[in-house]
Length: 179
Image (cartoon, rainbow, N blue to C red; front, side):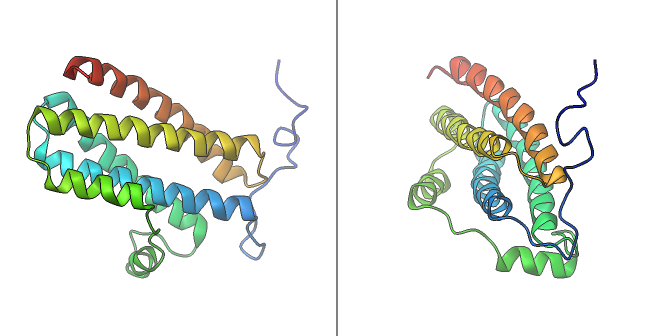
């Protein structure tokens, strides 16, 4: 049977129009996603050049593509008239780049200085597991707060499924790599 009881099914939930203000929860979600996405993207860029395990390298390639798309989507939510793929969008993306917490900055610094090899692969996978757990918590929190922004809520639901799949893949890789 079709769910006709929830506001979304009754047509009552909708995305804010361009003139309507985003809620504080929407702005917080966008900023949290941009920060976590930036970390995952940078770690994966390091892994693309340093990973030795073929599965780790392939995961990094997929993650780079996914995080670039996700960043573009988050910027489009922040400013519907600009996306990261447009010149003005790219400028806005740079001007609204999230400030990273010290622990994330330190982890990225460690990866940037790490030598290629099995230890790098293990560290990258461990950091991705931690990052994906953080991303999952962001999705769960946003979904739980039942935003009226239908598009952002849909992205959060889709992202949640992808993140859960990635966590499963990463945990399998971690076992394979011996940590």
